[in-house]
Length: 392
Image 1 (cartoon, rainbow, N blue to C red):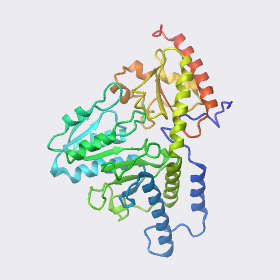
Image 2 (image 1 turned 180 degrees about the vertical axis):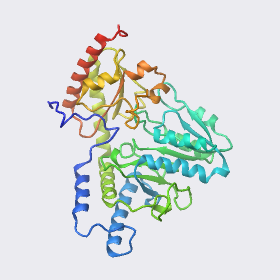
Image 3 (image 1 turned 90 degrees about the horizontal axis):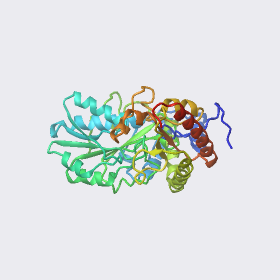
Image 4 (image 1 turned 30 degrees about the vertical axis):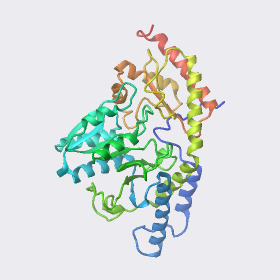
């Protein structure tokens, strides 16, 4: 069994960031080390053209993963930037067709914050709460749509609970009402099959480091990019159809492309592994009494498990679990000590939220690691419940 060492912790925080795949790392290093491989992809000289050809290869690799048109993919710094461009840029472009926008209360902050910003600009936002299982009620979505609604944004797989929304049905509803549909798919691309040539999704946000690629690179899928216009948020260059100016980071893009190709070839095996690890974890964890799975199990991506241990303080639990890497919520909000809004929307109170921990697996996770983590988790929960005045 793996020994606990601070320099080699057990990593069960894949929803925050996946480890870079060795093959991806090799491709990045090869790009950086190769002689005369530093050309600007926007330059017309031989080195620039050579760099752009490699950018095109990577764009093709990502488009194959999504079954999308390569011309509809815009390189960004990650899903956060993609969300901002998609939501703010499209809302501003279509302001004359309506100022009403629809989203969910359980979105990642990279989606909820742009909507808050647009609200300050005079847009009207309808924020739909999920049912107690975390899923969106489609009848509520239909009721929320008005004549002046121009955009709906709903994430695919929730980063805290793994709850997976029925984006195909949401996309159909939006298409029927001639409304743009944006989806934050940072947690699902490369893990769940997406066919963008058949799914009527207009805008889709993607992150490289969630599919074992490098951090700092992502993409925005913009259906029919030449026709569906959005206002850019930054200016100063013609790169990426004027939407995202700046010199393209060749080594990151190459790594993202290789990660996309690997994700496409390994997706079925990865999903089977996530199902197995999830079942194994939940079966073993039964040895600990009175644990509760937050959100629907049947509609959950198996690589993410959010567990509640009544009578236990989550921060204390995290400290006792070190150097095991787990989380108490979204990595983007983990330092502000604010209770999870996602779990609150599922009906949990502050004490229940504070007793919840997220475990998220990678393709490197093993049964022996899970055994060690559960042993440590069991010991910590037993101790914390024993000293808790609220647990009986």
